[in-house]
Image 1 (cartoon, rainbow, N blue to C red):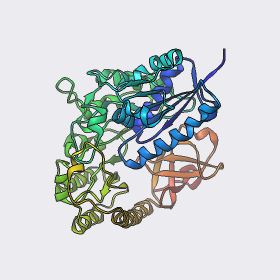
Image 2 (image 1 turned 90 degrees about the vertical axis):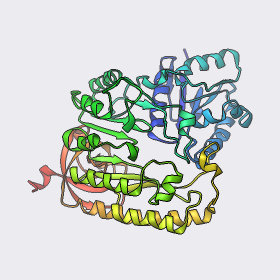
Image 3 (image 1 turned 135 degrees about the vertical axis):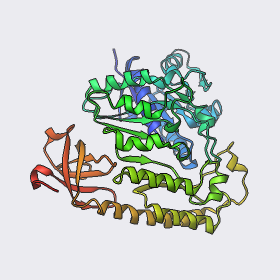
Length: 446
């Protein structure tokens, strides 16, 4: 029997990456092997994002390129999933004539069924219904050989309705997985040699709100901390409004919880935060940053920032810069505001010209580069524990690992160290990485 090959291209966040892993796992049961070469594929899936317009345009460009492969392979099947698919639905077929099926964020579990139907009937399919129970949220994706780190979805959807964001409309209302199901999945991963898990959700801080009383995010972290074989726990993303004192305390109380939090602030202007419907003030955010650093001085804090939100004045922008100077994030993901249809921000007046947004973004990113390098330089001479993930991208002679605070470290080391937790000394800092030496090579370090 001829092998069938699957090519998946993923756009967007870590949640989309994990969704793609689940898609591959489902289709493996139908006989599909994954390939990195689209020209070999019998089935192509684009897992899309629609948070920003640029991401959507990349999808259309790729579909145009990949669609041409049908000229040489009439049996090729092409499908689109994810947020952009959820948004466009059947309209996607009108935009891209060579598309065979479209499936939304609640319908990953229907993939084998849809592919089989296309193979048999060659009819165009659209499946974007929301379901009360999200059947795909707990699909188990077995780790590939040598994999050390895995994503685990603990919840899906969002109830916050930030003015700029389409996620509540495209992922649906917030829904949490039962803790027992999550622990069972993590136990399976640990049995396969996984060392680190990253817990995923649109707002992990509100985990448990759809479950029985007493189940919350901190109780889940404590349960995971007891799983044998798991060395590290990470999570993303946190909403500042819902960051509790109990979760802040976890960074000192739970040994396996990594010393890093991604805490999107979006703006340093209270006026804009209110327009964005974020539910907190700059002062609230600063207090929580202070509490995090007081309890865990070595914690790495990263964030998201939007520039050019409708009505953003030069004063609003300067307040964001001032806030960055006070906090000095380890790194940030910063973006020009991208208008999304159906959001509250679409109706706001005071749209900012793209050239002005670009100017503000460049200045902000230059400042962040300065802060990032300062933070990295502070680590020179320090002792850090790494989970050694594999070969460095910079040199075949180097290994790379990450600190608990999410910093990449490259160093000389032997292949057999991969997968181990090792202590290193930071010898040199760069903007995007650190250089280190194994402790055993440099002796004891105070």
